[in-house]
Image (cartoon, rainbow, N blue to C red):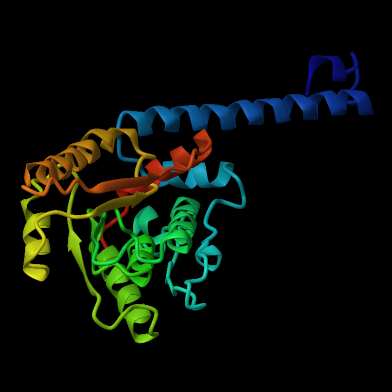
Length: 279
């Protein structure tokens, strides 16, 4: 107890209600300072690329928003022109799925689907015979939506955990079985890490479509939240654009990226889940 709470010569400490209030306020203030210190230390660790211990993860989860950003947005994907709804399974981003952030369907993907839907309303054939490459596909929502709008071939690529590619493949099959995709559409998945040589992407395209040597569309939703990966992402996009420019037809791909600005708290949370085990 504060010294002011103890009366000289008394065997018991006696505090007034105002003094108790002051002590409680001081305790709450120190608690807030402690929370801030934990968050700052974790921010420094994420920035330097350090791996985090389970204790740090647990401490951060205890201090962050009790309602973390784990909401899935699959119900907000717009309806197809046929009136059907693309079905996307997104188990979510959590320590139990161990699939990382790719297992979550984020608002940036939903926004891109709305933009594509608007383009389709103005020009229903704008994706006819198109070859689409989705980078960082995760659940594959955007690529599957483009296949439903008329793309001829879609490659869902992701450099994350093997479980993500299985998730994207399952979503492809679900929509094909549900009749949301044209029976003749070609679609596949591939493990691809940004910055690798694009020959594997080109080979996959030529294997399926012998008449094409470059992709018509390169899309990615919510790929830019981790700044350390920007260079590798840009290198891959640049190589794909240069490939199209070298062709006699100069078929330059259209690059479409969507981004969601997030508060610092969310960025910290993303960094903590990079060290989860492989699925």
